[in-house]
Image (tube, rainbow, N blue to C red; front, side):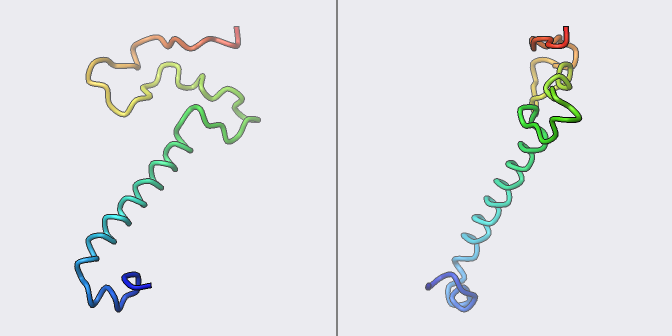
Length: 83
């Protein structure tokens, strides 16, 4: 297939930025998916050691950035199942 080999890139160097942008997008997508799988409280990998992992995020800031308020000082509206 023309355009996918190293010889084709040598003939048409204008394709190099396209390959770089596509590779950067793929790396970013894999990073974000990995971050969601490891940091999200909705995902449970080991239920035996921690059956309710969302309770750990009761007083933690979950959002990336919030200029309006600090979530570590507010009480969570999550239900308390152990009571």
